[in-house]
Image 1 (tube, helix red, strand yellow):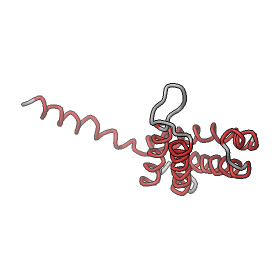
Image 2 (image 1 turned 45 degrees about the vertical axis):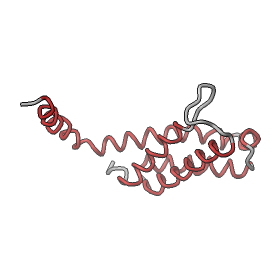
Image 3 (image 1 turned 30 degrees about the horizontal axis):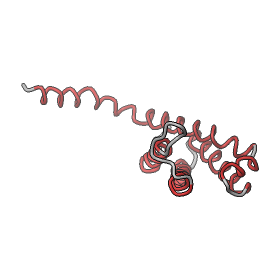
Image 4 (image 1 turned 180 degrees about the vertical axis):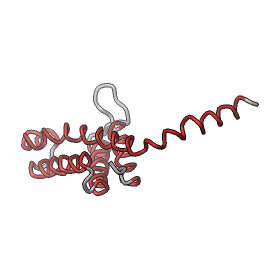
Length: 137
């Protein structure tokens, strides 16, 4: 038996058993995404004017963005309107990436600031939740 065939068989036996925990994995992904978005929503809700001055957007828009992030995160945690929450957060991340690339000229990865690679993984996580339904938990 070749090494390749051995690895294929090991993969089928070992990792196929993990599929039984798919819903737990999706729940953990939802929790992680929600925690990150709550962390980033709170300053927008607490100090909209200050955030608006920093990013060059109206304070009302910053507050609405924070509200969407916060409420969508609650939806992800509780499993309520999970796909809608993930869709809204994916749209937020598309906006964030666009803002960083077009307005601030931020590279994919930067040593002196957060590049948009962080935004891209959050976009992908929300798309995964959107397409999977987020699991049954």
